[in-house]
Length: 530
Image 1: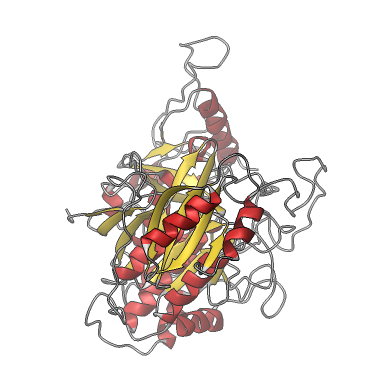
Image 2: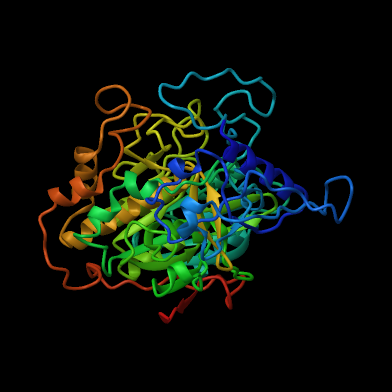
């Protein structure tokens, strides 16, 4: 462990007691110049000095008053000492997965991985969810009916079941309407699902599944090696993904962040309530279109900003109902790429929406999941036709937090990545979420190169041009290997971009407002580029 790593970890420890933004302003470790090269992918980088001390004010216990001060910049890295970059300690933006997930099992390592056996406790006794844990909202059911079903019949069904209607949304991709209903009196969800499914008036009854954003906490150094690994300087001489619409279905991005300026076309809130930009959505958007201090993969692409995740206690949860609403809205706006940086259980309704989106020409990219090698496959990454992305580190090593399995498509950098954060800030993060966002950006580059390309062609080219890692051939650790943007673009037949999206085959209507909160949930706002 080098001195810079020790120092960063000390800074994060202090931030736990007194969360603050940290300005990285100098370097004095002997190996800093070699480690932090000019290929970081951002215009200025600031790192804590090895010789920094703590302020003595504000409490003798080291809590509440500890702060780091800085001294002069390391002479060899003077160009990286301005402008100042505010870094939010990742402890402030760690997303606790739902209880049925296993926590990441350790720090990134070089391949091959030799796993230490964790202590088996009731909370972490392997990757399979304990039977008693739930992966769905415990008092809700989603009821799907054909669009032609009269509202009176839906009301009669709800009344017969003694269920309270919370809201509904039209899913144009499926030509159905989904109702979200609350189950009273603690009735088991499986019994309600079975009873409603037997009714001939409905197309189906579904659990309202829970999904978690796939971003892990950081405890290491923040070199931006991803731009080199992804060969972005070379790729951007060919295309920057101009005008390709990418839907980031996430927790809502900060549209005012300077690195994202001018990239947003429209914002849709599937959740409702107070809308506040969130770190995860902002970070994933920056990985795709960043064009300031941070270099995104497709800086010329355009973003459909979809908020489908909202904090519920300590868990950053998204539900089936909100996620499929966001997908359907994005499809109606002509999205060419869906970025799904989240993971959770198999969900039949979401599976059908994704299948319909792919059939309509939308490339769907998803995080492989951060539940570790013992976890069962997570979705939507494990859905057929979805590009499931796992993470690698700066040495092309496999990570211990990432899922394994035959469903993995490709790998991309996802360890110790500097990402955009709300309020013009930045954060250091790891996770398959970021890796998926990088590959969504690559899909945008490929579509800009040839707008007539299909989702299947994008997947095939990414697999065929990936750099093989691990054992020879496709494997359960890396899929086909590390994505190669230059090789992928060279494989594509260039076609001039005529419009920013392929028109839908049939007219589609955006989802209706949530009946429980018609003024917020389901709202859509256009963002004027500045």
